[in-house]
Amino acid sequence: MSVERSTAKYEQWLQERLKPNQEISDFQIKKKHKAMADDPFQFLRATFYRWAQLWPKECTELASQKEDVVFAIGDLHAENFGTWRDAQGRLVWGVNDFDEACRLPFTHDLVRLATSALLAADEDHLSISNDAICQCLVDGYANACRAGGGGFILDSAHQALRLLINDALETANAKTFWKDLQDENDYPLVSSKLPIDENVARFLSDSLPTGAKVTYRMVRKGKGLGSLGRPRFVALTEWKGGFVGREAKALVPSAVEWLNDPQSTEIGAEATLKVAIRSPDPWYQIRQGWVIRLLAPDAVKVDLKKLGKQVNEDSFARTLLKAMGWDAANIHLGSKEGPKLLNRLENLQSMKKAWLLNAAERMRDVVKDDFKAWRKAPADN
Image 1 (spheres, rainbow, N blue to C red):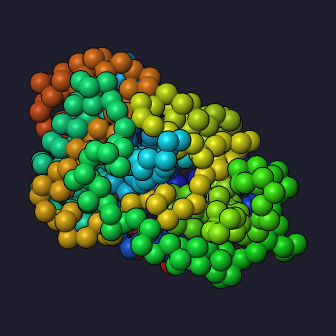
Image 2: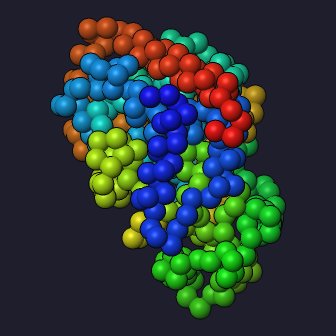
Image 3: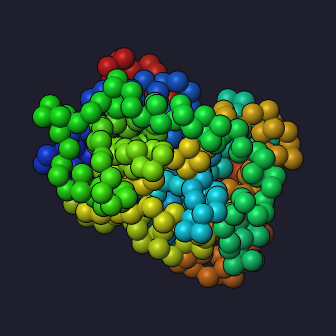
């Protein structure tokens, strides 16, 4: 199946899986299609459904290892990391998007993460060799398995990581952050022409301070790539001297379910996060097919382009990649014991030390082929 056909079929399924009063956004879908033609890294981020088709064929031996199955992230890549405040008010860093969470071999997440890092390096977002990328991810993952996992609390430890991502946080531009969320072009007010389901409005208001006067807006712009097209809303209120915000995003089963059982109703995010070995985001909720989360200047997705020149220094790049590998293990350790994961990882390393590099380079080449095919396709695909 071509990438164009795969995209059309997935988007048709996505519309069918949304509730009757929801529709995918044509504006966002066009934006997504355009971004898919920007570079292979952006293409990978936007097309987990395509990856889900190709991974079992290209990495058959890894994909078929049933004893390796865990609660996996699914759509893991080098920009699927961000920050949040935990219940104790501490700044935490880690994987922050679980839209495609499902049960997969632990190697899947490592291969996809490594593939994305190789593509990011190709686009000069990381300055480190392919071999070093994979070794750092494996080292971070193995160290987490040995330690039994543990989250990244940036207020008290992990200062190198904190320094690295400081430029990506928007705390220095908090005023602009809230102003942008009130832009009528990107976040128009809900109305009879742009309605919000009353249940979604209730989910959002329930998450805000009691008695707050809430303004609801539709998300027209959208910040991610993989979830572009799904209905999104934000709720804003001025409360005791400052803004408070929440976002609601429609959830559907993972693209893996689309392939294996198109009628499945299983959404893996809640089960995956429930068992993860780290300090959770207390504002992240899943309610009747919607994910509700906090909006704040220091609760953001970390864009590699915002990391500054430090990410091109070898030591900082290694710090970041090892942390990524470690937090992937934090998720997996919720459903499989560390010694068992470590044993499987060490077996892979002993049989073929470059197993991750080989798999990631193979998947990178497949992604690039798809990217080239997408760019050659008609502009309105």
